[in-house]
Length: 394
Image (tube, rainbow, N blue to C red; front, side):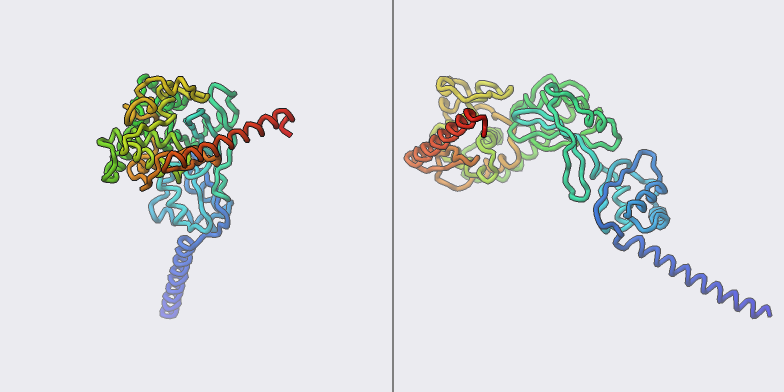
């Protein structure tokens, strides 16, 4: 009898172990295999949230098939206590293991709402936008110009959220004065900037910031980034380039930056100025004249007068020979590389072509024909604008 009981007990134990092993393997496959999510979602993890609450949220949104298995897997990998506060993008069919990694690896939020302070050439604006997980595109909720427009409620509400991301975005071609004005106006940051950095030394880019960050520290980060980009461009420069120092390359790049907003044209525009330097021609570029008038402090807001084209300033390239003494803006990486590696052309002239780009020419006759076409386009546009005004735009 006891032998029979013992035999049954061993059998039961073996069956139990077999079932337990099968259950573990099934749970492991559930944890590691692609998940049930069919469309990306944004998962918010609040400060102080625990793995139980987060796993239940994930199960309710259809991101995981089992909240308990999600918690057991996270516990087994010793990540239960590593949850990070923020909003995180969970992609379709991500496994539970991958989702645990997303929620515990730290760093900036990957979705949710962000506030972008844009320091542009013509205006400074604040944009509140939110990532739509289904399209992976940002949807604008509000935009305004500080000091010029009323602050929208969406901005005040968003700014107070713990998981909101904040970025400072510098446009290519902004001046150092514009950057300082913009940073001093960002209410998120601390510490006033009193001295404007030398022109050209700040890298146009997007910078992640947090409430309470120091403006001076951010400015130093921009300078470090530009120094690295300039060093890389100088290292990669063409051997025949008619500039002798990285500083001269920076000046040339700033002119390229201000002369065209068409990315595909940068190398051609750079080639025009390089060819002129090589031939001893004056650069004769309007943006340098404008800088001589404004010193980068704001936008001229009108066309240049003939008297201003003849006015002697250190930056008036209609008057001076060679490059001006300083950059006229902060060039981006692409313009630095275009100045360092210009296209190989014989172009020495260019003029607007009416499409937003330019018509390039090797000879004065060809350039004069391009100028005549541009004057005709200007005249036609002026007549059309006058006609629209007289008919109320109908």
